Length: 143
Image (cartoon, rainbow, N blue to C red):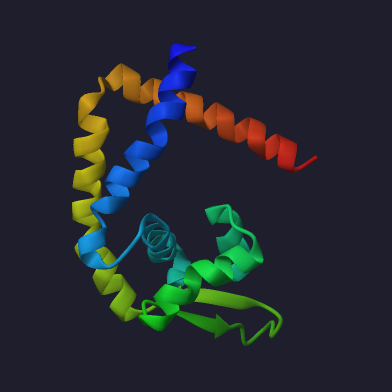
């Protein structure tokens, strides 16, 4: 019960605290995650449907999520010359410059508010636990 209550009572606060550290850069947590995913993808682009799935969003949710980063020209929508039905999101040079600037500050925030407070064993337990949660959720969504 202690673990569950702690998770319920503190996880949103932790995420909000880390997200607040992104505000000076004009980003929220969703923007940062989207830019990070694209910056790490091959060719710095992902199919829109794959990006939505990775971010845990519906197609319309991804469209709403992308409004700000498209307007700021951090991301562009691009087509596929081989398959005109496929649409991609690609991080722009402006977006890459921003994520490279923000990433060290974001990592420092995550470390300061979470990682540095935990022992190596606690970090390993978190990793194992969340991997198990993910596996169970993945199995249920494939049924």
